[in-house]
Length: 326
Length: 294
Image (tube, rainbow over all chains, first blue to last red; front, side):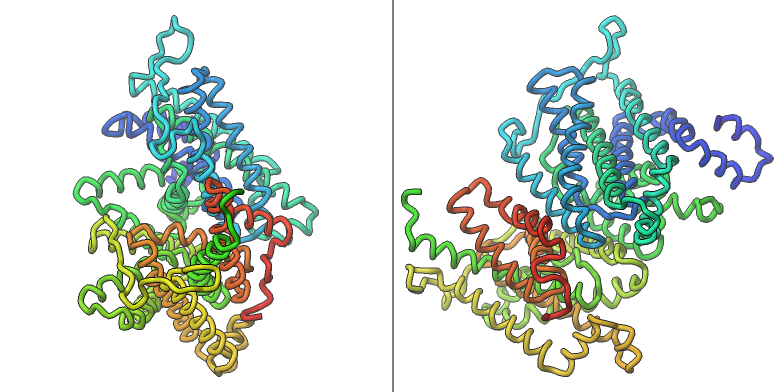
């Protein structure tokens, strides 16, 4: 779809962007298909893709619903540890381990959500942060989790029937394996956003009391959005466990929660493609600065503050605004 | 439950109070800033850490604990005012999330700057000679320094109460928390009040960091776990309520140190259990948010 658009140079760029925005899932998948060939190596591309899925789940809650959670590391971590433990300790097949990770992350999101949704606004950020720290301590003490050393030996070399020889040892194959799940996540979020439920989600961000007055059940909408968001972050965690063959306890740390907030804001909250742009920029900036200084966090922090102050819409959001696309 | 005597319980209770005193110092500042400015200061833990490092560096040049005790809150408070003036102020009126995000970035920068200046390794910090040793508090010998921390916290809280309830500036602070518009219409520069309140809150956080240093040493990362505790305390006590911050801070400290005695593996989780219970029963916190010092 998007290639035929690009073949018409006579059209206004804004019209092209508008058309791409209309077919956002196809356009996103199109970019993601060629993406590893534009990166220095496909392993970096996989990392960025996984962070993009993580930010996609977070953005659904923060960007579209306006609820700032500082506890999304919990879902990434639970997803990662579930898939990791099932594969490493129980030799479970990947097509069972990954869905199990998503389901468990969704259940943890349900438990945290039930409590956190009783609070609003700023309270919500603090409560999600505190509860995710609680998950951190719980997993830390779990005998199977490996404690401080993290979980190792999450080895998944081969997927699909043996006759096909789809080996994940090849980094490009691995990337496209992850892309299948990422595409699923992007499609799912797009579908949810286009549904009446998605309309209510965005309406809650704009004016919560009005939505309530219209007779919608705001609490249930919030909880459902929270669980969906957690499930997608759980998927990102499971993919990350397979990608790195390990799960670090730091993935549950509050810094990981902060990371996804940064990625989302950098890319453009409330935009469909923003999470991917944010993940790409964040990891490139981090890589670039860590090449010549070990204090890359300083520069990342300064860049982040600059975005909060001057470009709160993020890179992609500002770009869309310049091209007059909603 | 052999070996747990009344004395041990009493001592652990006091240990909890000393721990809680540090939490109270953080939570009070956080609550004060939120009550006035509706800003959740995610850099509060970083100011706590900077306070400890400021005291540490002055102590190296001028080994006098009491000078440090006065210098630290002034220095961190000034730094806090600078941050409010330059970074937070442009964000007023742009929604509640932006100041929160900005202070989150600020914490990142502050921690990294301290790492550049002092290295990634932490340092031990000796208890001043005068406060070493222990005192008999009726249930046994208790470290003198921890008693001192409880005492200083009580003094700071007393001073804060006097300042907010009995001075004319405190009246403006209370009025500003209720309705900044009317205060501005009455011809008062609310911006200056906000600046001072931010300085006051961060100054108290810095003092807390310095007081905590002899108990736990100092490291660039010391602010983060304590910030999470301060969040739990403000949620349990009720955002914007100083009484709530005090009560909840002491409660969390005592429960944590008693949990060490009875269920060591659950000690870290104990405060989250309290928070979950409070959220289920009283989502607005124990002391609601009916206004400052109320």
